[in-house]
Image 1 (cartoon, rainbow, N blue to C red):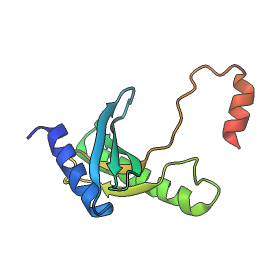
Image 2 (cartoon, rainbow, N blue to C red):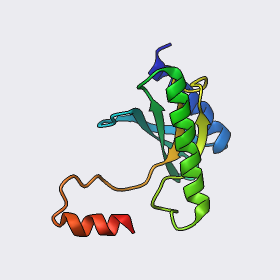
Image 3 (cartoon, rainbow, N blue to C red):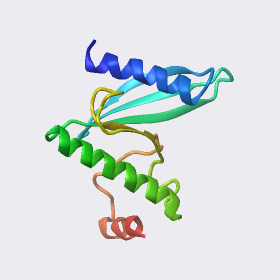
Image 4 (cartoon, one colour):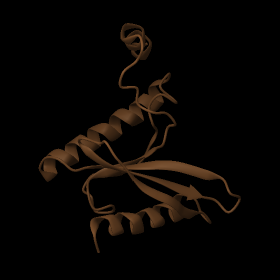
Length: 133
């Protein structure tokens, strides 16, 4: 079984565990990641409600570095959600697979936040100040 097939099968199990009665919906690879492979996926409930998530998997460095990096990322995202003020600005972390035993590579499942990157803002200084607040 390829890594992508293993991850998709594991996502089906994750959806069944976290959303009883739901099914794995659209699964697609996101492009542009530098340090991680990112896969967007949906959990579709029988009512039609759709939950969107990202499987973020570390691909670079030796296994030990990938494990440490993904654990640190999971802890940071968890802390941001509990620290107050970051809800909606940082994705919520749901599941950690530090060793890659479940999804094939060290990774985590995070919520999918709507939006798009801004590579060339019209007023960079204003944009940076707003982003820093």
